[in-house]
Each structure stands twice: as structure tokens, then as C-alpha cells.
Length: 117
Image 1 (tube, rainbow, N blue to C red):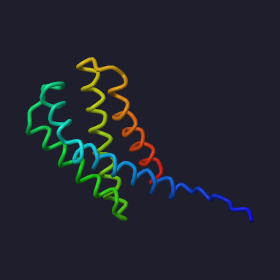
Image 2: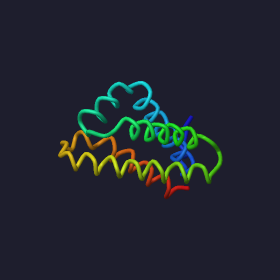
Image 3: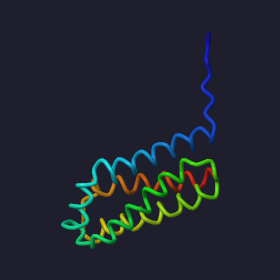
């Protein structure tokens, strides 16, 4: 029996939104200690900014998983903006490209998903 894999833009969008949400949750909840260290020591950014960024990213991660297209678009745009800011911050402190790759990948996911909506 031959099975065909029917990959649609909706399937790609759903897979990307799950991957994006899980990634954000992992970084901002599971690896939160690393975020605290990076914001304070590597980037020299205030705690209040870290907390606001975390709240926005986790809120957006949840909104991406809804079936409301408008919420998904707003969330993707917000995350894309924050990922651009992250890339600029990495460049500003002269991080190696390896440290920028996660932000670039998540930015790419957001832009692809905005295109698919």
C-alpha cells in the first residue's frame, strides 16, 4: 500500500507555530536562569526589561496556539520585532554568529508564518 504525504501550507503553519511556542516556553521557563545571566552579565540590560520581554514572549507563545488569526498575526509580529531586537543586541555586543542563530531562526519562522497566514 502506498501512502502519500499531503503537506499543505496549513500543516506547515501548524507545525511552525507549535515549534515556535515550545521553543519560547523552553527558553523563557525551563532555561530562565540562563536568561537572567545573559540579560544581566552579557547584555547589561535591566531586570525590568527582561521581565517585560519574557511576559510578551510567553503571552505571544500562547496566543500563537489559538485559532484566532488576528491574535496569531499580532503575536508573530511582536515576536518578529523582539527577535530583530535580539539580533541587533547580539551584533551590538559582538557575539559570535553561533549565539545569534536561535534568534535568526525564530525570526525566520515568524516571517515565514506571517507569509503563510
